[in-house]
Length: 301
Length: 331
Image 1 (tube, rainbow over the protein chains, first blue to last red):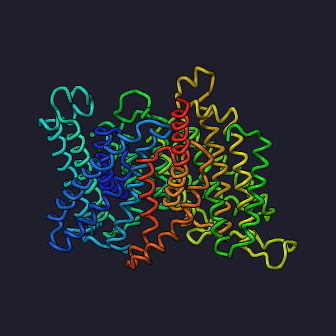
Image 2 (tube, rainbow over the protein chains, first blue to last red):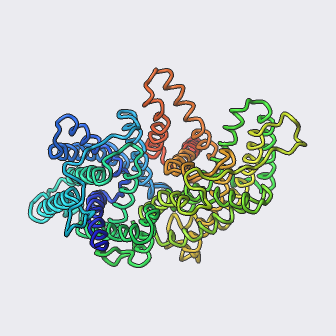
């Protein structure tokens, strides 16, 4: 029973990491930047969701509002910050690290602005359904209706995203701009616009990850909550495991990471919560640096 | 800087040290304490400049490396009662070993991968303090360098003692670093950063050179960590948050990562920001939320603006402009 519990907890947490990893991959594919501000955007979207929940009262209306808010904000960041960055610092000794530094600055900026507006104290999004575990044969599982709901919602969103990418013209443009921007531009795709759209989709995915990470925990969140730092690191690691270029890889990477961390926590020690992702990342980078689905090319970013 | 002979270099540092000594006697306690903080930041930022500006590797985990230095110095002091000056050497050595291990992993990574790995370290490592009881958990350990020697006079305060130690350490480490950076190793690092393939053709083992950069940088960061916990008096996980790593990066970018000569700028700005934020908050009569978060806001905003508009730092920018003017004059 403990084994089943461990796996189910791992998959639920992992599905949230997958969403975050998808956000990383979408941004990476559209602009070749790792957006370390992704956690800040997810946090901001969670505050949007919180405002919606307290005003409307419905979690299921608040989630799309958070997604929309995250998408718009993310698109704005691309237009206002990233385009300027590409223009100004494309050469010089720190050209390679400039985008990393800029997104980190953005992360700090978002956090401090949030703390200025909403204050540093804990806020709370109540879970939409019970987080008390199911009872099977008289034994109480850790797996709860809430976790089931998170899994189902994540799954539906991933299916929608797959349909968007594989079955629509827009998805084709997205893929074309990622793999061959110049040729895509030649064939009449407005690559700049598509890039912004990639960021917007990432913002929406990150918003869901943020809201779910909050309700899957104790429901509380604050500008400094460690949950979001963890979400940042886990999402990044999941994306790296998946090869950074593949959406499917991001999903598998997230689930894998979730299950591994869950096993470490339950069978080894709960105190390893923060160091476990680091060790997993190092192992992955040493054993299979191209990721699970990545092509066999060196990791030169 | 490069044109100076090593001896002239050394003399300059001596003069600078003497000026600091004079200044330390003129100002009040708070300023002396801030002076010590500036010295700590100078050391930490210069270690990051070596790594990012010269060797081209970005680290978001220097806060964690500082924590290693602080904890090893504290443990050496508390468990073995070794003399205070030796504890700093212990910090340098222990952190350099940690840095060498990290560097071995880092040499295989580039850009965002390295950034993500060091980020994971910065978040993960401080939490280890709660795993081992010898590290004192969340409250941390007490790190006491002792009273200043009596020979320095009765009115020689504790803060002034901190300032002396930190400033001396900063002078020595900067002098060492500026020599290393203009030596063969510094050239190897810059060559590897600008064009790895070309550097390899010239016979530079870029992998080994990167690991060496990480090791030295970590050792110096460890020294800064030990000095930081000296000024605070304790060492605990909360003294080395992710924000510290980000602040160091901001300091390095503000100083200009490609040269050591601007390192004072970043350090002074980092120490001055809380005070400036305080003044600004008072002027506009803002709420508590804004007052407490204004420093973080200013640091992040400065980081973004610098990367966007002065990506090579003010010193380099000034140099480039001066060179352009000189070229025009010649025509």
